[in-house]
Length: 560
Figure 1 (cartoon, rainbow, N blue to C red):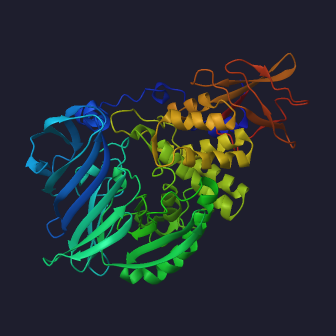
Figure 2 (cartoon, rainbow, N blue to C red; figure 1 turned 90 degrees about the vertical axis):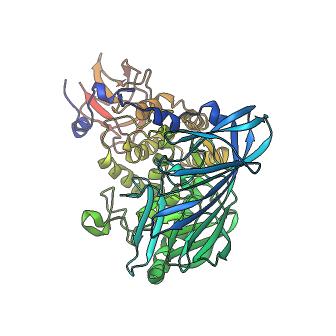
């Protein structure tokens, strides 16, 4: 059997072996993983409506203390529920109607028992008081916790970052993505002379007359736990407004005092064109009530809702100072990522995918990361042209490993493969190619953000919506690319003098329309058989003049 040149290119990333198959990743999970990732009746019995998180940061001692008020609606009758707080933090007491209630701890789960039955449909509340030395993040944002450092003038600089690890690494909460709080008041007390910047809008600043100042920030919209943030430093504020699809959107910027001049120039260039691009492709910015913010942080960045953490050092591309390149790099290798700030574009893209639309389970983090990585190419398309956007996506292939599936295991708080970033982007560009209607594709992306506005979603929600709106059954395409590491291969052979094609894939019944052409001609769609050969049906085509659109299709090609 002769290998087509496009398969030869892909040989290094196609490997049909047991480790690449669905379910082959047999990582062992612990009781603690299940407590964190499983939606048991002790969690589903209540729907969280409101938090008031009130925390004091003793920076010298790296110690925090405070409380969180839980307001909830009972979804069933119950007397016991679960919330979450890392075991290294102490629960001092839990108050219900002014009295302490008993609690027990198991790993990072805390179980409280009420003195009476909380009845279905009733609204109630309790308050958790806690303290301790939270986990210090050693390599934020890739590991979770609190960052304690100083700025270049030696002033304290503190930030939280906890995606994956979970918000319970620094505050008590119902720590599961499936249930987002409807609104939250964040009160952070910082040493006087420093400022805290958190999500939403600043409501009040209070000098506590004890060496601390409290900053009250209110988020009026649903927000996932890991997005809630504290950023403490010698911040200076400036702002502007953006004329968006829903009217005037406030854009606020909080940066270290000595970076104001460069921030005004840098943010002023990229934020308006980012918002223009993403409102065009995804629909209105989801948080007009809470505004848009960039907050300078000592870590690289994070998609904190309405308060995006920014640590890209005001460079174009992706800051790689730790890689010996402080001027920034282009992760696609195409050069097209060097005219804009990667963190501004990528992390802001999460305001639509990740924050507006949030996966119910961490195993479906591809919903956050695949669409957001893809958003980078749409930004390029909006500021340049479609071809450049496609070239950028094609360049993202260099970061794909194809070793484990993109979808992770459910109910254990575990993400899937890091391929969810570049491979996810490539998949979405390929699906756009299959749909072959750019206006319909744009309508699908905007429709996702309208249909699932401020909601948590599942794999089926997203994949079915795209298939339904496209009018094409893409179920097996999503199945193959998200549940298996292997790429599908299209095999061509000549039968009775006619070129025929079939798919070789892991997903049962895999079927995807494919663009091919006679060399030098125009691409047309064919439908290779799902495991069996079907005629290509193009006049004059043969194995010697066949060309497959491997620029847009991420597949292996084999010619017999």
